[in-house]
Amino acid sequence: MLSLFTTAPSYAQHALPAFDVYAVSTSASACTITYGPGAVQVMVTRQGHVVWNSEACKPQPGTPVRLTLGVPQELTVTWNRQATAPSGCAGVLPAGASGTFDVVAIMAGRSSPVRTFSLSKS
Image 1 (cartoon, rainbow, N blue to C red):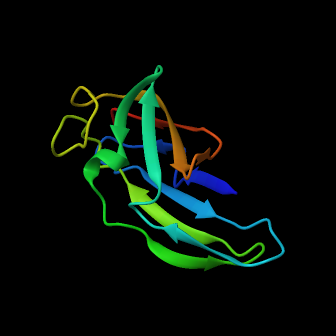
Image 2: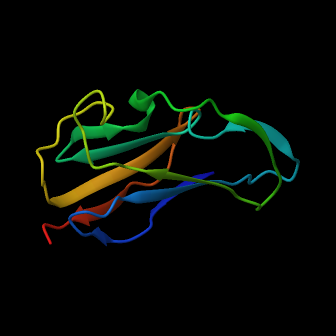
């Protein structure tokens, strides 16, 4: 199971949004998966348009981790609030943009529930 949580419901103008991604096994038997920044894609959207995609940042590859029933593996992904290539890793976001955004984590064809957060001007 894959879950994503924002570290705050709203981020002030200069705060960097951070997202905690958890992979948890729901199987009684242990398994090994590749997990880490290069294995988990975090995508921020606004009104249905991608403004940031962690995969475009060319993150370090994931590493093998062993999952056991109910014990989460955690990964924190931080967004620099820039969206234009190359520093923002794809997408378009006007400087100083504020409002409501959605974020989702995707790994091995599975996605987390979508979470909503906001960026404020102050």
